Image 1 (cartoon, helix red, strand yellow):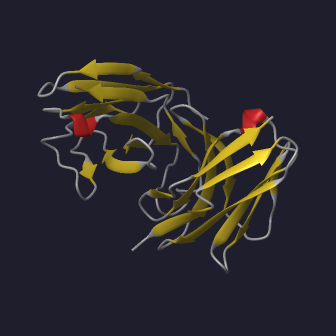
Image 2: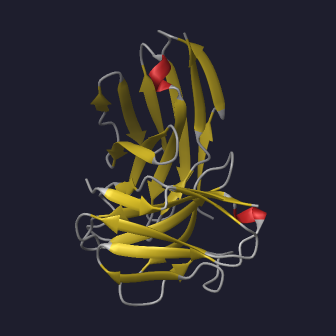
Length: 121
Length: 109
């Protein structure tokens, strides 16, 4: 398994501001993901963070609102831009150790960071 | 459309009871099915299942997968108050994992 840390663990922000969440893994991983979990709901995938290239966003999420960086295999950031109260949520990064996604890959568990609880006023 | 459906949505039991949580799925290019326990923020990995009929067991928890009928169950025997949590089922497809909405389990002393 991987040891994953996220910063900040929680924050309260004002409407219209932006927050950057950091995710650090203790080992090189191939896949890193960012999820959102709104109150009372399950996890929704925001995007796959790709090392050295633009993230792959899921339907309903755009780069202008959720810019993501992944400069190397152990670190990624998610920014929640121009926040509104609807962005209040838990944001989770997750990782998968896999060398070949879709073939031999996807046979390894996905591990989650401790999460960032965001409240937007 | 790929989807994962969990049932029941919530469950309240007494300590010592046995519970069975269900997860059915329709996911293209199935790779694996995972169970997680979520108590506060981060889901904690419990099991990963890739083959039908092979039970995975950890203490009082066990799980099995049926790839023909496209479902899995998670059993918890002799439940304890510490088992109270949301249990999430996730299915790995070709490019991502798909999550169910979870089953909220409450164990009453």
